[in-house]
Amino acid sequence: AESYPNIERDSRFSTLTPADIAHFATICPLVSCDHGASEGELEPFNTDWMRKYRGQSRLILKPKSIHDVSAILKYCNARHLAVVPQGGNTGLVGGSIPIFDEIIVSLNALASIRSFDAVSGILVVDAGVVLETADTFLAKHHHIFPLDLGAKGSCHVGGNVATNAGGLRLLRYGSLHGTVLGVEAVLPDGTILDDLSTLRKNNTGYDLKQLFIGSEGTLGIITAISIVCPPRPTASNVAFFALDSYAAVQTTFTKAKSQLGEILSAFEMMDGTSQRLVAEVTGRRRPLQGESPFYVLVETSGSNPEHDSAKLEAFLEDLMTTETVSDGVLAQDETQLKGLWAWREGIPECLGHWGGVYKYDVSIPLPELYQLVEDVRTRMEQSGLLTAGKTSNEQGVDDVVVDVVGYGHIGDSNLHLNVAVRKYDKRVEQALEPFVYEWIQKRRGSISAEHGLGVAKRDFVGYSRGEVELRVMAGLKRHFDPNGIMNPYKYIKA
Ligand code: FAD
Ligand code: 2HG
Ligand code: ZN
Image (cartoon, rainbow, N blue to C red; front, side, top):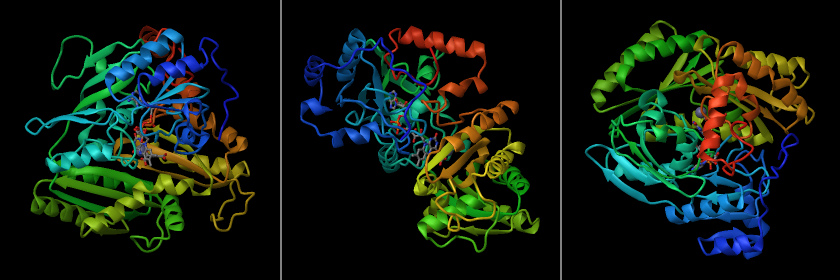
């Protein structure tokens, strides 16, 4: 795990005393070595999903109600104790764990479904509800959560809103900035902000909930959200294609948009290297024979199976006759559909297999998007950190970089550039940064399309945001959190 050589503990913050712990014990359940817990019980809260970052918190608080959250923050603010809100701890930028000894406020126990209106499709849930639990509940009512992602079994809806997660169907259902209708949050001084509206339209002043969407725990703790959910599609199809070039990927996307129209629900790209590594790690049989430089997963979701199949068949025929794709397969049942999705959703987990991954989650205009992966691969080879032509099996322990891969939500111009390594190594980092950020800045792209800033990107936000924007953001942060107790050392410098 990485340490933080360039970050110093902020001396404005107090250190935890036995009296503090005794006080918190009157508010809610907690985990602390000074309260009967072992070191091992603190560990999972102090370690991130990638095992890249590690915090040193001595106290985990588990509030059971918004009033508990309010009492916690009121006390922390008065005592100048720093706080990290934690959801499912699946974030990929080191934002959900402390840097030093910040108190972790886990939302795990705030997990009730408050209400659902089947006519409007509006769901109101506590922040700590796991995304998959919310979706399973909605399925019973013939609705779907308008966000889906590989971490659905662990991430919280509150964490999703706090990171403004994008996911696999943003193309179809839009961003949380559009679907979230209300947010209930506790401000750093303990005040409850009730903006838990269930209205689609409400032009009565500044739209405060929007500030919390993507605020990564820096403005307060989200305790509940309301969100508008679409009817659950009754017909779903997944097709998986092999393609010879990135140009063909773009042509396929154009055709998918025009020929599938309103039933297109996902358009994901995986490069050949990513698929080779998934095959190697899982040992599963590949959906298509041979190896291709690119693969695309296209999903349709609609309400009329005959109508959808007719559209899809015409689309497949066009792709084959124009030789846009070199091969393809259509899932014949639910099991195959899930199986094809696994070749896409399973990539992040498989890439961690060798020891570590440097992750860049970027937005670049589509025509140039994949060039970044090629340029980074060349740079790794030229730096002697990756040997051209050797597969991971042929490499030795001295080959630091296992491979450079690109995949992602191509329908949203969002590329995931991942550099899998045997261990985190300063030489790799120095070859990647600021190279990647400068590359993106030149194309006016975003250095973080969906995972956020956390600690990983806070020093680089200037590559995507101007000085004036950053100054306004810092002003907002100071307004909400004058003592700076909320998720310090992360996001932006305030
Ligand atoms: P955490 O990791 O616990 O926290 C994330 C941040 O939000 C932290 O800064 C934390 O302080 C803050 N936070 C959490 N809860 C609250 C709260 N209630 N109030 C205030 N602040 C809070 N992201 C995408 O956008 N698209 C994807 O497709 C995607 N796929 C993923 C696949 C995998 C396998 C994994 C591991 C991650 C993926 N992610 C993806 C990353 C994504 O950010 C998270 O999965 C998810 O949105 C984080 O939710 P969480 O509950 O785990 O939050
Ligand atoms: C995905 O789309 C996630 O699978 C994770 O956003 C991407 O690990 C990554 O880089
Ligand atoms: Zn993603």
